[in-house]
Length: 130
Picture (cartoon, rainbow, N blue to C red):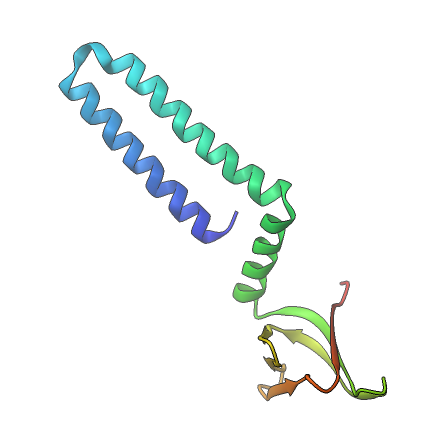
């Protein structure tokens, strides 16, 4: 799971525990049902979180993004082509890239910043297998 998901689910767990503790304190007869319902809510939330980050492609991409952010990037090969398909430049190394509608930005392993504007050509970014 991502750090954000763990923090969010941990906060939810604390809230549920607080509510269950309050209910148990105020209503003596509601102790066992409150604990059971609280446990079910927490278990369901964590189960859904684990399922999302291990069972869906969006969750797997989120984990890959987090690994890239915390690990200084991913081993990649970036190839820049002109409009006729000729290779203009090729970069290989560990990059964390940013992109929007008209550019890709990354810093290479030597600390040099590269900004590639691609409306007049193509850029292919491949992850390199380790």
